[in-house]
Image 1 (tube, rainbow, N blue to C red):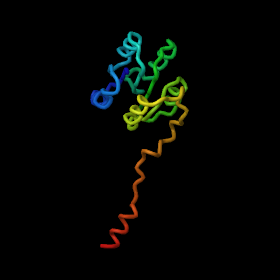
Image 2 (cartoon, rainbow, N blue to C red):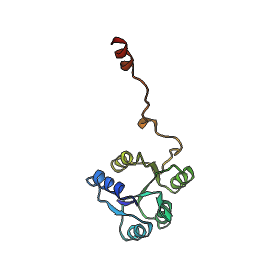
Image 3 (tube, rainbow, N blue to C red):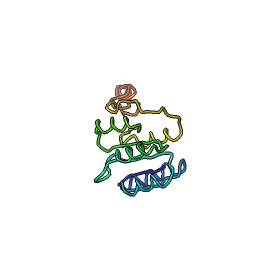
Length: 144
């Protein structure tokens, strides 16, 4: 897997979480990742959408135009629906930054469809904390 992430702390988290599942090469910038992407065959390209002067879609375009046999996951700190839809149109999977760790484990272990057909504007409600009071909270306060 090639991981392109400018944030050192997040790169370390990826390395700790997924080092046992896959060999991870890490880069911090677009130029270094572009060179590495064409020099080695990768099964996965995982890139942040924001890469200083470039963005992760540049890497997605390069991989697609060169017909590299790589699966691509693009994630973003701030939701940008037009860029997310563009990434999906180019054949990449899109996740928000807060869900990328949970999603990547599933991507690496499971079989995936050819394209990500999910709407990036609709958040996966299975991971959302719903909050509120539980019925046990209200009954315990009544009993006391």
